[in-house]
Image (cartoon, rainbow, N blue to C red; front, top):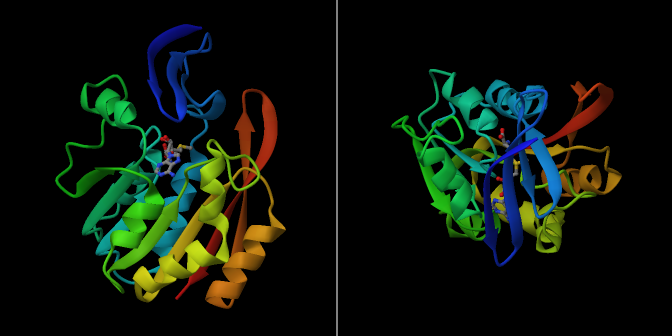
Length: 214
Ligand SMILES: C[S@@+](CC[C@H](N)C(=O)[O-])C[C@H]1O[C@@H](n2cnc3c(N)ncnc32)[C@H](O)[C@@H]1O
């Protein structure tokens, strides 16, 4: 295991490392959040939203990570622009300096360093076609305790108000969560749950994508 970069913020530690199997791995606040070996679910977060909206002119993504969700959005020629809300400035810096393969040089990408809750709250009403949230390992495995507010019907209601008609909210989770399904159903009237089989360091796992449409 070789450490590539390490940074500390008021929330905790951010570590980027190269595993012995060659994978690039990101840990946030001591928690494994992802690697560049198994990225199917991060990409499916994007494709589920892209399939559900007619014209993805403006998209908001919560959580930059290693950039796989954003990269999958950029592969769709219909995409107008995507704003990424990322709370850790050092991660954005590592991507800008090339320590993490960058998606930031695409003119359609904008980055806001901040908490996705504040970034969504600042959006004008009915201004985006999709909001994609992947900031934790899901509501049951938070990287920061404060993120628990993201999965409540109160914040999901704020998200809904920022969506244009026909827009979608899509949320990634590493576990099946009835509480999130119920919150999305309460706010959007229905919740589509998509299980994603993944192979994680020689283990078979299932991740989940939750989606509500406005
Ligand atoms: C699992 S990674 C995202 C993976 C990403 N979907 C990809 O494809 O690489 C989670 C990211 O969310 C960020 N994050 C955590 N809490 C956040 C918050 N409240 N607001 C914005 N970003 C946050 C973390 O720093 C990390 O970069």
